[in-house]
Length: 229
Ligand code: IPE
Ligand code: IPE
Ligand code: MG
Image (tube, rainbow, N blue to C red; front, side, top):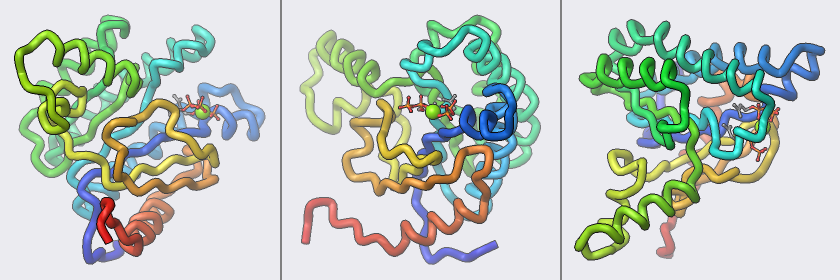
């Protein structure tokens, strides 16, 4: 494994291209999602090894409800099963599972699986693995504004953060998107103000830990100025 002089504290990933990957192989879109989970495992393991403290994965957006029912149901079952299956490994590796998004709209079996896994992994200290499920940044910001309005708290950039789904997470240092699309698709719009963005043409099921580590190396070469000189 490569040694890094420094690693980003928080990496967020827009895991895109499962459908195209499957189509290219003459398979159904859902087969791409199935393989996508294996890649998630590989990237989580690599993150843990190099000492990333926060990994956030875009799993289902508030716009993904536009997809067919079969695909949506498959995804929800895949999320629930994967979360359940992966709990022992999360615990062994001291990984805490966290979820951001509007969970109320999700089917009860998925909410139960998530709640159980969050509780069961709450002592994980090495890595916080956050799944963004039914997450949309605009929804998050509007909900935060509503909550902030209902309190007497003075609204500042710092205090406003406490109303976001991500209140317990630092802003992402690095946001990666696979599949060649160069957009954020409503992901972490408030938090991404100074994130370094990295786009790769690789479709998510073909993404590897080697490419992930190359991106971290590239990230280390970037000069982050945060508006300074
Ligand atoms: C990303 O892959 C996974 C989810 C949105 C759940 P896509 O399903 O968007 O794959 P493409 O972009 O259609 O290839
Ligand atoms: C973003 O990918 C959402 C996830 C990766 C979960 P999409 O495939 O939904 O985004 P668009 O439609 O290409 O912008
Ligand atoms: Mg897509």
